[in-house]
Image (cartoon, rainbow, N blue to C red; front, side, top):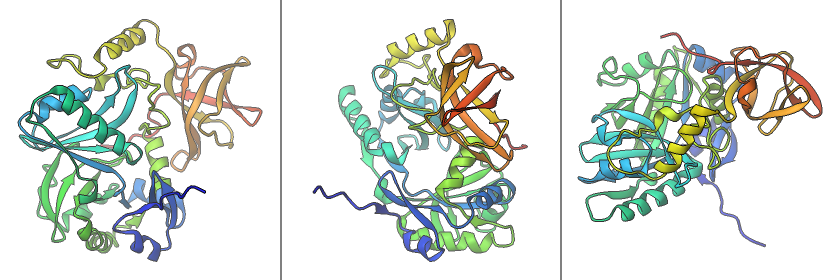
Length: 376
């Protein structure tokens, strides 16, 4: 019998269990799935605020005078042009254009960047960056594994600015979306980033693991009157699905390019020099422009049955696509899904589209993504 490694635990593990969280193994981590009703957690984030432990995410620091040059070569974005204090959504692809992971990169200083990878791909990204640093040749860029040096908390929802403002002197009003600044929150040193994965305004707080519990408790106390609740990964998934945000392993895989996923805008061909996957991505861009392959669309159920990843999308008795993510939408009150479908059936309002749910063809409306967009 082969031993399997026990899941890793975050610095907040004991606290989650004391709150009665239902735990689950996610990408090798023991993580809170929900604390009570995932629907109530979801609606709390939409209407008030939710507090998440995201310490399973993978932080990788890239340092040195050639750090920007390395990231320009290793990733599809133009990271050397990123201003200090700003963040950018980007991707790392392999040589044939397939997506290895989607990332957020923060520029912390002139010669320091933090790359945040998905938990399931953190080691893959670390290895790829290390290999690409060696391929670039010479010195001047160091790749450092910082996964054990950070805990990550997120407070998300319309009440989150007020909650955080009560705990910090940092200039939150001046902090733009996809920006970050160092500060102190409830006496805890933190990188305060205005980023998130819910479709709401909110903040992600990178702190030392030893400070995570004190910060969680301070945020909980500060958010009590505003209706803040602890939230698990289950509602994080339905929130990002409503917001049309892709999930690696579902909408994004090594078999898809950024252009297949409708995210070709993250590929910056205009940047100086070569980058990994450039030739394949130029071909993918050409194909997408001439004859689009299957297109990522939104589907809204006319009935109550919930589609799941892998279910076939059909029209006229033919399979025209596949569901990548599906769930009941607490905001819309109906099941929703993202799916790749043939371009001929991708226009919003296309009639005759259904999802094969255990042999029954359930009618679905094709809609543009996202399903939900917050009021600014």
